[in-house]
Length: 406
Image 1 (cartoon, helix red, strand yellow):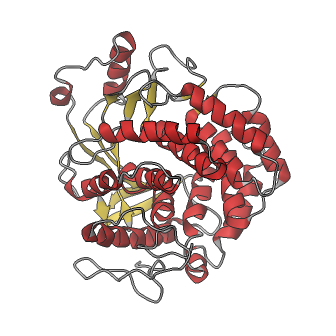
Image 2: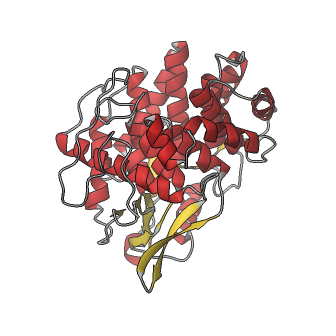
Image 3: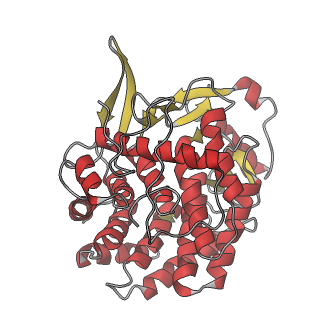
């Protein structure tokens, strides 16, 4: 079923081969630091309209699934919804709240993103996943302006306990504490998390998967994923913007400079990095969400905070969605209203990353000769997760080139 687009008011979504609908303009958008190419703007409008339709397909009346998996049937390709995710529901709410209210209600079966965020906040209370807690606080604070005090205190207690934290969770918690500062005296939590994140940053600007440094297995503790780079980058950029913190801004700039320097020739944002230095450990999989949402989101935040402008790298990443030299199959699927999740290697499960992790643990910067020939890239993962579309909306709708209401 095709869903009427909500991104651009009173228009249907652009169909394949048709001219895109021009975006609505708003008065209170964050102005772009530099203009995007016309072809990038057209592509982003098409993608964000697709995201609205895709989230409409995925919503079950109460929340969002873990994934939507493409399956072959006698009638063609269909999407099968699997599981339920508190994390992904909060992220979807963050993206959807930037749409006009009538579009939110169309996607959410009559509800608004604020109502969805409140429900998710209730479900997150007592959740053992610190990341789910942090995202719920962030969504409630930013969308509704009100966070349940028990939810906030639970997050604060975990973050101030001194126990190891996943870098992503700590970064989301810092962003959440910043969003909640008008309701709570969160300055102490902001400083605690900022110090812990900064202490984990390596000399090349990169971050490990866990903090403090040294947490985890000996063969993996030096590795950080792309997510482990972008979420602390975002949290530090927002800290700099909110508190005029030059140290946080410099750290965010250093991370952005490094990942952009390591970006692939076709715009790929690679997957695993050596946080002790400045190199890529394993390139694949290349995830679509990194290309169309996560990298743009955090690099825009950096520019807004007064940091460096990486528009060219953002646009090159968007280009990969069409060029993707590793695979022949299309990644943007208009018929199912999704962007397929990633392009990976033909390999036994995680073989390449395990080999690369072990090799670089023993010898930093080492490469495995013949790996691309032995385990070539080209396998498309035919699933799409709600957070991917949520972050896409969140990344782009805050800019006056691309519509939305904020």
